[in-house]
Image (cartoon, rainbow, N blue to C red; front, side, top):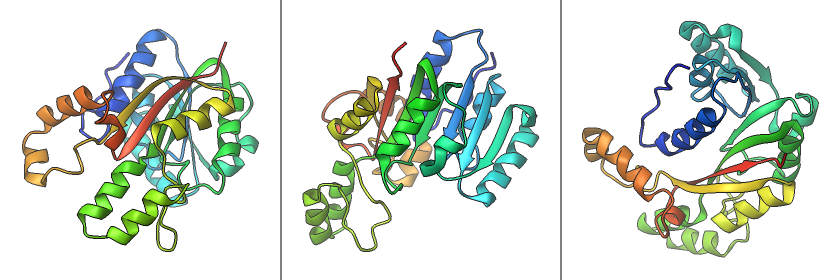
Amino acid sequence: MEQIRTLTPRTAVIWSVLRAELDRRAGERLSVLDVGGGTGGFAVPLAEAGHRVTVVDASPDALAALTRRAAEAGVADRVRATQGDADALTGLVEPATVDLVLCHSVLEVVDDPEPVMSALITALRPDGAASVLVAGRAAAVFGRAMNGQLEAATALAADPHGTTGGRDTLRRRYDAADASALLTAAGLVVEEIHGVRVLADLLPAAVADGQQAALVELERALAARSPYRDLAAQLHLFARRPA
């Protein structure tokens, strides 16, 4: 299997978890579903590693870019682009046909995350895994406070969904307990929770760009450790459908 080339501070933690799952199933060609996968930042490397990937996304422009990207990488035959919303996933994917689901930066923008999670577990085969990435509540509170938006920070911290309403682009944000409860209620068993972008968004660009390898290692070192994990911009949950 070709090594996946994805060592960036913003994605290294996620890829570390995904690599462990791919290694666990070494020699298998997995069926992967990438919900909201956009231009193929995860889909194309997975296809390069030999897996079959279906990307469901609402944006025709993103899917067109995905198709071009897959063709340029020589994996067009292993990447399928499907236009649709996460809310309508049940009608787009056959039940129990997927080995690995990616649902990154989706649950914070859909109308209701619970039907989406139900559709994800329906799509998974028994023992299939789900990689779920959500926006972190604590980081958003601290970010607004540090930018002088104290009223917005107060409102976000108090809101049960972790949003300020109005012009807020996200419908909800999560802490580890809330996100884990959502996946568990859908029938998944949460195996790991990591913080993503613990420091990547806080450092000056000169530092982040000039010491990228060191930042990757620091992100990995802090990702599973409290309190660093809980202050990350995003939370990554890796869960499995029971066999």
